[in-house]
Image (cartoon, rainbow, N blue to C red; front, side):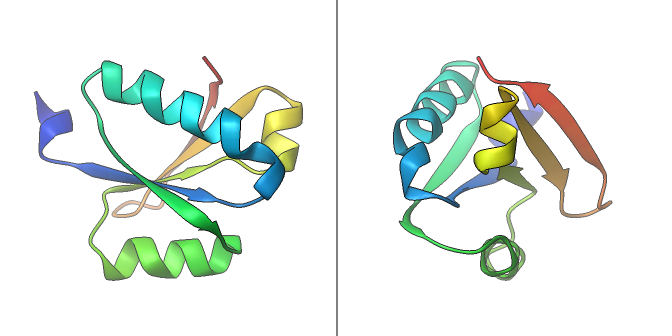
Length: 88
């Protein structure tokens, strides 16, 4: 439904998280979400800048701290709201 009109950006924040990042992207895509995956490592600030510049609706934050807690954060780029979710 609304997931088809929005796109989320899932940047690579740490090279050690590649498989976790791709597993998350696959799971969310299977649920009908449009996910764009970043393959080049970048900082969170650069990822946020890229997501805003390219009109993504959400930024999915999966850093080493989040992964250690088996979580990821979905930041809505319009409202600025952040929600923490369990990794699949």
